[in-house]
Image 1: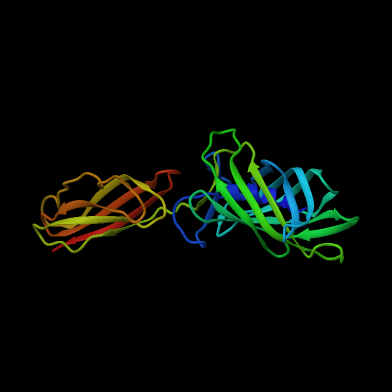
Image 2: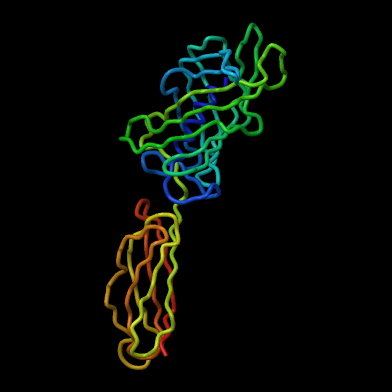
Length: 303
C-alpha cells in the first residue's frame, strides 16, 4: 500500500529540486523541462527499479513486495513553503499479496538544498493482505516519506529519483495479526519530465547604497544582490533633477562591474558631482535563469 504512495511522493519530490538559498521556510517551486510547474499540473511517477517493499520495522518479516507501481497527482499550488500534490491515482502490480489503495491522500514537497527536496504524505491508506487479513497502513495526518534527488538530464528522460524509506502506521480498523508499524522502501522516477528538480522560488532583489555627495567629489555607488538567485545587469539610468548649471556628474563605468552577480555579491559604479543638485539613479537587473526582473531607484544628492 505504502509503496504506491511512495511513488507519488517520489514524483512530487523530484519536481522539487533546487539550488539557491535557503532555509526550510524558503518558498519552494517544482520544475520540469526548465519550467515552473503551475497549479493544476499533472505529475506521473513509476517504480524506477527493483521492487517496492513493505516489511516489519525490525526487517525480519516481509509483508508485501510489488514489482510495479504508478502514481499520478495534480499540483495544488505553484509555490509556497510546500508545494502540495493531490494524489489522483495509486496503482500496484506484481505484488506478493493482494494490494489495494483505499484513499489516495496527498503529498507535500519542500526544497532542502541543491536540486533536492523532502517529501511528506498525508491521508493515504493502502491495504495489504497479510496472513489472510487485510491490513491497512497509511500516512495519517502527516508522515515524512523520504528524499527527492533532482536531475538536469536530457528532455524525454526519466526526470528525477525519489527514494522512500518511511515507517508507516497501521490504520483503523486494526487487527491483532497485522504489524502495528511497517517500513516502506521504494524508489520512483518521474516519467518524461527531465530535467525535473526542486528549487526555491526565485527572488530577485537588490539594494543600492549612495552616501551624500559633495561638489567635485567622486563616489562609488554600490549595488548588492540581496535575492537568492544570480542576476545580470540589464539597464541603468541617471535622471537629472534640480541642479545649477551643466551636467550633474560623470560616469566612469557604463554599467555595474561585474555584470553578473551571485547572491550577497556587490558591484560599484563610480560617479562625480560636478554641480550641486539632485539626480535619480535607476538600476535594473533580471535573473539569470528565468528572466524575473527587479528595479531600484535611489535619489543622489550633492551639496
